[in-house]
Each structure stands twice: as C-alpha cells, then as structure tokens.
Image (spheres, rainbow, N blue to C red):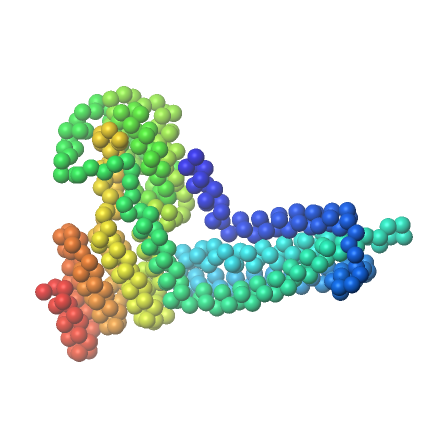
Amino acid sequence: MKKLIFKWSELKATFWFIPVIIIISSILLSIGLVYIDGSFNFSQDGIGRFFFVNSSDSARSILSTISAAMMGVAGTVFSITLVVLTLASSQFGPRLIKNFMYVRLNQVVLGSYISTYLYCLLVLIAVKDDNDYTFIPSISILVAIIAAITNIILLIVFIHQIAISLQADKVISDISDFIFKQLETLFPEKMGDVKKEENLDISTTISGYKQRIYIKAPKSGYLQYIDSEALIKIITKKDSLLELYPRPGRHLVQGGEIGLLYSNDLWEKEELETIFKQLEIGKIKTSQQDLEFSILQMVEIASRALSPGINDPFTAITSIDNLSATMCYLAQAQFPSKYRFDDGGTLRIIADTLEFEGVLDAAYNQIRQYSGGSPSVIIRLMDALTTISGFTTNEKHKKAVLKHAEMVLNIGKQTIKEEHDLEDLIKRSKKILN
C-alpha cells in the first residue's frame, strides 16, 4: 500500500497531471451540457433573452471566436512559460526548473485554455441548422462565455504570478519553506526503534550470524526512496541483520555492492528481490528523503549569484540567511542513529544516516569557495556561523561549526584587500573562535 501511495503521489506531482484532468473534465462537461440542452427547453423570455443564443449563426460565431481566442492565448501562455524556464535555468540553475513547472497555477492556466478550446469545439459540432432539424445548445454556449471570462481573469493572475516567481527572494523563500517542511518529516526519521549506541557491541552481534550475503544494486541510478518500515519487517521475518551502505541521494552502479546481509539461513533469490523492491532507484535525484539535495538547490543559487557573470552578492547573502535558519534548526534536532531495532529490541539494520557536519559542509563549503574577493559575503558567512554556534549544544557539532569559522577567516585573510573590511571580519570571528 505504501508503494502504491508513493507512486500516486509521484503521478500527481507530474507537470501534465492537472492539465489532463482539466481537459478530460471539459470533455465530459460538454457532453453532459449538450445532453441537458437536448433534453430540456429553456425559456428565452424576459432576462433570458439577453443570455441565451437563439440563432445558429450567432452560436457558431461565438463558439468559433472563443475557441480561436483560447488557442491564441494558450500559445502566448506557453511562450511566457518557456521564457520563464529559460531565465530560471540561467539565473537559478537547471535543477530549479521543475520548481516553476510544478506551480499549480501554471498548470491550471495551461489546462484551462486548452480545455476551453476543446469544449467549444465539441459544442460547435452539436449545433445543427438543417431544414428538418434545428438545435442550439444555449446552456452550453452560456457556459463557454463564462469560461472565456474566467480565463481572462486567470491570464491576469498568471502574469502577476510569473512576475513574482522570477524574483530571487521569492525563489529562495519557497525553497526554505520546503526545507523546513522536510526537516519536520525527516527528523527524527525512524527505521524501527532506535537504541542507545553506547550499549551496543556490534562485532559480537555480527559474529552470531553464520552467513554473509553481499547485496548488489539491481540497476544504476540515484537511490530516491527507502520503504523503511517494510524493509525492517522483511529482515525481522528472516531473523537477519542488514548493513545498508548508501542513503537516499547516493548514486548506485548496477552490480555495485550496496549492503551486506548477515543471516543464519540462506536467502532465496525471490526473497532478496523483496529487499530490492523497498529501494526506489531513479535516474534523477529527488528531495523526498534527501535533505542535502534541497540544501544544494539553495547553494546553487548562491554560487551562481557569486559568479562573475551575475555578481549579485545580495542574493548570496539572502541564501546564507535562509541556510542559517535551517542549520540552527538542525543544531537542536536529534539526528537518527544508524542502528535500527525491531519491536523486540534486536538490531536489524545498520544504515548510513545524515550527520550535522555533513549537512553543514553541503550548506557552506561551496559558498565559501566562491566567496573569495567578496567581503560582504565572507562577513555574512562568519555572522551565520556565529548564530549557529549559539544554538549548538552538542560538542561534536560545535567543533564542526568552529572548523568552518576558521576556514571562512582564512579565506577572508587571503582575499580581502581592504584593511578595514579584514579588521571587521577578524572582530566578528572573535565572537566564535575565542
């Protein structure tokens, strides 16, 4: 069931899902309204004469005008969307294109214009004006006019949304919001019950198993998702222990060793297949269980902003500020243990897990490397690390923050030529290094 839910969520996240649903709905709506028009006679007296069409020529003219206009505007919308994707790719990086493609409003607008065109086309076919029979779907035409008015409003909203979505601050803010939602989901992340590591004797536990079975990747690609609950049930059922080397986000090579299975019984090929089914391997990275991927999206924006071609330190500083908020959260979070237990307290999985230092490296290494010669960015990096240090209570985490502060100070001494800027950096560094 979890696999089915995962696949369904993937389907809903595709760019074409909403437009296709809207188009199918418009086709069904046209059929339904034409049927209603053919089954009932609507009075065109009183106020109705201002809204209902009573001429087949007028009906065809209205539907033709709306359908032609919708296709023309749909082409414009597609063009605007492609321009936005091109600008986003050059300014923010190609990996952020899908953030623009998956905006619901963009999908609704594209689907709405195409579906209105198809709706008018189908209703236009239903208009009849023969010598023996005349049929004018008045209600269907009225709905087409309402849809045209709605689409005009949607176009105004769409242009407004496009203008906002290209602002760097808005892009960074959206990524930051997504990261915080991801943090709440992944920390703590459980794969069975976690025990205290200091009481574990791993070598003794492993020596209790007679069989060693090497697990090899079934295909090449990125490890996107691990169904942890199902995996631990499979291992528990066979009374075994699995040491899994990669974590979500790592690239696997077909036939490469990805784990070691300790067991007292031999595993059949079909039983090993059940382990592979709990690992989702794809051609691209996803952020579903990979926090570093989301953080690197923010880092890419900052890195591009610091490139000589763009030279936008303000955007880099905004990225640093949002990354600082993320790292402050992680400084207080309980990182999951790599040792996972079943309900009976038996060690079942040894997994590779995220560490604070690794996430800190992913967040600041590249920005620091690209910040040489930009005093404002280097100084903001030092301020950010000082803020993170104030939230850090774990001694290991604090050492990682101090290491980055020293590296920032070193790059400042090497690249900052203005004496007063360097003095400012050294003064700020004393808050964390002394």
